[in-house]
Length: 129
Length: 251
Image 1 (cartoon, chains in turn cyan, blue):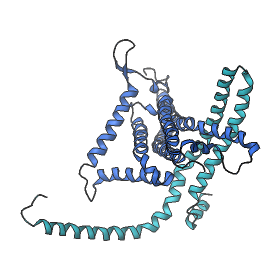
Image 2: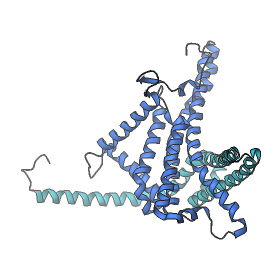
Image 3: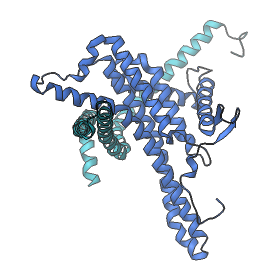
Image 4: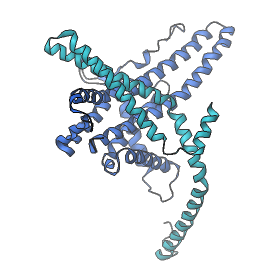
């Protein structure tokens, strides 16, 4: 860019394209050499990251459903004048919804974890124990 | 905190006016100030780092590209190609929460994600977007979200009720998770640091004993950085999963 008078624009472009090709080759080489290591490392790292996160997520899913159920029932009670009953019913329904949330979240996590049931994952598990 | 024996871990969450118009007029609180700081930081960083648009990115540009690709991958994984329509939304939420949590790790800075009203507002934004877009895209078919296929008719009312409560619980769990994580982490950090100060006031033996909570405080700080990033990730991931329900209702 600094010396537009020296080499013409065509040679400049040529130089850039050869540079790009060189770079692409180097990227491909680096990728192929790193890919194996990367794929072995990724799942275990993710599992470590989400250990506490998973627990907190399940807990909050469960709690939130119960809260929503109870509050919904309480508000309905206030509106209809059936004081304790709808809240009790909705509390139980909220409990069921909480269980549903937890089951769904767990199924999701299992699905997210399952695509790589390779040897490295199981080896990691054995090391942990 | 003049008295070293009196450590108040809640004090850091107090909202104060920086300046206000009139006695009860509109005010700029410290919470609002840090929101503005977060937005300015995000916008400034992203614009400045991507200005050169270099083919071979330097480190600054690379961070922006990694952030972009990370969120883009998350959105396409959870909501498919159609979900990329919501990429700006998810990316903004992710960056806002991430920068807010990380700003909160700086001493004396205010953490606005530790207030449930902030996280609840963000969660309601997601929730309302899902509902509005779901009805806009699918019409009444959006309600199929609440009717799982293959359920016998006599049990259907109960199942639909449970599904509705489960759906309504989403903004609560989304906001409570972020808020509780950040609040609990900051209180823990403050309590352990408070132990160091309190024990230190007892003299030499106290300083020796203070080594233990000091180590804990260092460990909790590291954990808090992890939590800050993880919670931003979880928030954005769940947002894209909920958006998936709006784009493709019916499991």
